Image 1 (tube, rainbow, N blue to C red):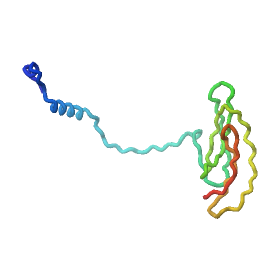
Image 2 (cartoon, rainbow, N blue to C red; image 1 turned 60 degrees about the horizontal axis):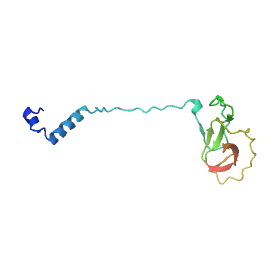
Image 3 (cartoon, helix red, strand yellow; image 1 turned 30 degrees about the vertical axis):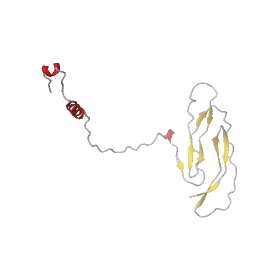
Image 4 (cartoon, rainbow, N blue to C red; image 1 turned 90 degrees about the horizontal axis):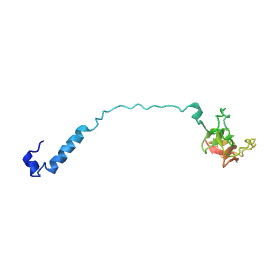
Length: 147
């Protein structure tokens, strides 16, 4: 679209609707072309050192052997909290070992518990265990839980 020299001198130009339509057309033509693609989900497992396995109700699983990594920095004062199983209310979850600035006592020995009678056949005994909480080892008593 061109404007004649006479229109320019008279201060007349294209009408606002015409300018807007031209602009919309230009923007529409410059838009991205969308092609339909079929996405295939990629399922990947985290590296073994990142895995936090879950175990169903029942006796506490055997400990997982972990390799202790180097402390986060070379300053002193780092203490290692070893990995251990923790009951989440529905299953055992492995809590990976990690470095902390707090003093860490050795994990105390397990407490021998005698479970009372089962509330029913749909329940299983989950043994008590130690867990690291608030910069100390805390005993979590055993209990009967639904399967």
